[in-house]
Length: 383
Image (cartoon, rainbow, N blue to C red; front, side, top):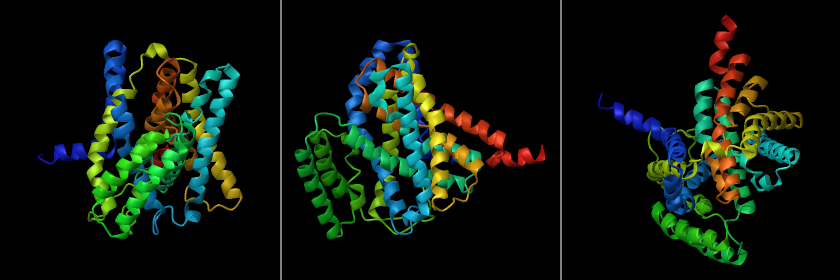
């Protein structure tokens, strides 16, 4: 019995449950007392979105670095070509669908949010896929590869297309070069503590992004690759039987709980929207994620295989369900909303659309049941 609280805490942290809890509290709060919620959200917005979220993106970068290292799931790239192509299709088609729906409805003021439906939430898509397919099914690592590639491309989109202020490329390049040089020297001298990389290099990188007009939440992304890491491949989002002691692994273990607390606060600061603000932007974002994502993923993966990309160990029915699961945008979609629009009606409409992307889990479950996929395969065969 004494271990039960630890198991519960591990499940909550391991599956980012604090984020939807924060989002649910924010939704209730905003619809009960909008003025007090807005005051609270405005006070913590900068600290959470521009400072705290550096941990979230750093952990995403950590997964990318390990996956791309020798022995990792994305190395060599030819081994992961199909999920990477699928991820590209899962970004391009929803964005195109979003812009097409805007053109059809005449809502040109929503154009800047084109990247919102290109997002896939790794944590929740992984959780849903693991439940639908079970952990050992090849669809789960395929989805994770897809989501990591989606995150990598999403970081580029965020940096290039959504500057947080007037862009000062010289300031950015000079300060970031100093930060990266320091990290290079630390690694060259075999510094095996992650703190100097994060505290010195990371702080300078944050100043570079902030001063350069780019989103400072990305500050640790270029720093993470410099952290020494072991050559291991326990699997995406899987820990080895014996905890690794390389700096990158220690950084992840140290940052995991603070990052989850940041996600709780992120949900509190960003998800509180009165339901009266539902509008055209809401349905466009939701449709582009829930419909556009699976369409883009299936089309891109199919075309990629026709042109020689290696076929994944999943069939077309599995692929369709994976595409539906990837329609859960949530965390990254919410972040893109706040990057794309200032406070106001458009931001609130698109935020609700990002929250409604949770409906993709229901769509994926229904698709799996109808197609006899994953946990529903035996049920269909015996019925």
